[in-house]
Image (cartoon, rainbow, N blue to C red; front, side):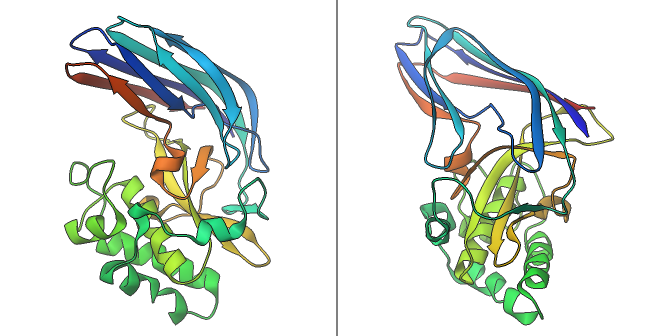
Length: 265
């Protein structure tokens, strides 16, 4: 499937910015599931200070705000050709070894809620069946609802709240899979929705590593394995590692954020 992306992120500030620096992961890379036909990132109110591949292999642009600016606009546009492999990316590749993805993070610490969900995996004939069951159990336990959680909500907090979005679902899945002894990681990206072009935010899902299959993806929020409607941006141990944009700002005043995203064929 040929996907066309237009992703605009605008930051507006009450007062001129003294200093701001952001890690921008808005350039998808080719892999067995996707080919990047063309891609461009433009910046207004700032500039790219450096470009590098992080320890997960993600493409990162280090963007600084122009001193004194009151707005920074990042626009990512491009097209990519994707394919359906039933969610199977394949063997582990890149700089980070499998044991790294078995380590917990503050967002994926396993408490009673995560531990209870992780036990679902062992109740099935195969690990793959168990992970599908885990995905369904998470969505039943934490139905999709916007506005109940925030970007820093942990897996245990989302379970306690009882509602969440794709970021929460992916975080819980990663935490539960690790509790069951499996390497797991968080994936950020885009999802094509046939019934709409305009979207409010990028998407997120999870992957677990299985012997013989390698990395296998699970989109808990939609109850499916990622197919040709998905375009990967970045990976990491949790949402913080794979966030499309993260950074810091110095200066007084409030910050406003507007995101405009279109995903279409």
